[in-house]
Image 1 (cartoon, rainbow, N blue to C red):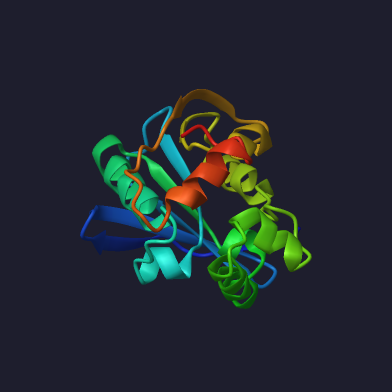
Image 2 (image 1 turned 45 degrees about the horizontal axis):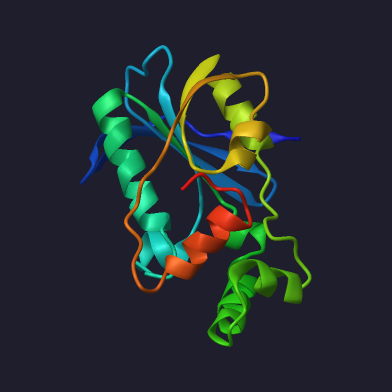
Amino acid sequence: MKITISEVANLPSRFGNFKVKAFKEGNKEHLVIYKEPLEETPIVRVHSECLTGDAIGSLKCDCRDQLEVALKMAEEHNGMVIYLRQEGRNIGLLNKINAYALQDKGLNTIEANHQLGFAADERTYEMVTFILNHFGIKKIRLLTNNPTKINSIENVEIVERIPIVIKPNKYNEGYLGVKRDEMGHML
């Protein structure tokens, strides 16, 4: 896997003053947002891109809320957010919108992905291991509810799982229920 790595830049944000570094993997450009100096065992959030949630504030998911909690924690605890470009559980924006249309007709998030010919979750996490190794991080406190992320990070010790507790709303209650009941998320 050929990875191109950017320089480090400052990123002042409404969540704090961070450093950022980009990692280009093929046609995907991932972003690492972190607060220096990183703790010896930093809090790390692995966050997959969600344009509709992160940028537009969709209420159909909990992505933006999770990202905001992660950025606040990264600021408070000198941690890191690894922002992976894996839109729609890595099926892409066009297919994600098609899945939304199927959900509007009554399918749940997994059924919609299957109807479109995809697995429930197409994401991969090899870049996480690469990024953590790049930063020389050997141990982390992982901010997640997703057991797949826990099981996919290699060569880095996860000393603690920190849950992200987001209050559901009327638009994402079913979605969160499917994540909990069918995907094993620890909600």
